[in-house]
Image: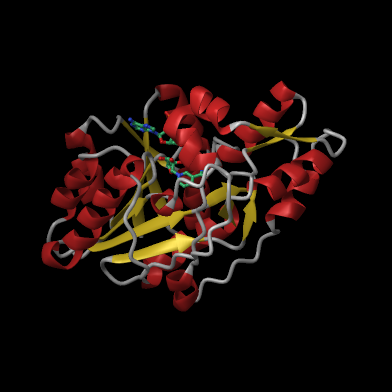
Length: 300
Ligand SMILES: NC(=O)c1ccc[n+]([C@@H]2O[C@H](COP(=O)([O-])OP(=O)(O)OC[C@H]3O[C@@H](n4cnc5c(N)ncnc54)[C@H](OP(=O)(O)O)[C@@H]3O)[C@@H](O)[C@H]2O)c1
């Protein structure tokens, strides 16, 4: 199949593109600069020059493909309507990439939540994450009425080396960089909040499986375990040159530095269960977070 990917230069999009190429698909990828276009070509991806503001370019590229994978932004409201209109009545697939952050609470590091959310668990998102939930609903509800096989994939905290141009995810490198600034592996408040995680290679496998088998309107969390931020700090402390030293950072300092993104990213519980993915036959195989960190060197 010919598949159009937004965010093809990115960590998720680039890794998914590499996995799909290996499975024999051909890929066109949205790219914002000529320089990155030539880098994508070297990876075997046909570049489409443009951005998420270029609706005509996105429409044409979507219609010329057998399906679309949107990874460029989980938060760009308005863009999903462009893909839905482009693919209406085509029977093609549209995969929207979101994040498991939709289920996050306001634990402020104080406790580990007993709640493990699967795709059928009802919840009310914190206001900060309500736009993402609206986007999920839009994509999933458009599926059958619009004649599109719509799919939402909501990964948890991703780790592992990317296979595209961006080799690094966001959360762990940022946490390690911040820890370097304060001289010890950092967690926030009591650090008891737990977050699910998934390896990028397993996540890329899930995209392939979803293309092959997912029904219209489906939602997939992606995880292969979870850890508290204090446990993650302890792993960082023992593997990243901190001599086992950890430090608790007050929640107020986290919010002052990183706002809601920090509060609902590093101090919240976000425990999901990839029930639908496993039901579809997904079976994560990559190394767990603890083993990955043992050999991880940021930036390499
Ligand atoms: N990484 C995680 O752990 C994780 C987990 C769950 C959800 N997510 C969400 O998934 C999305 C992708 O994450 P990522 O880790 O792959 O990020 P990333 O490595 O920064 O990649 C983002 C990609 O989107 C492209 N892009 C961004 N804005 C664009 C625009 N306006 N027009 C065209 N292209 C644009 C970037 O292009 P350039 O190369 O030109 O910058 C890049 O290819 C984000 O919204 C993120 O919040 C990430």
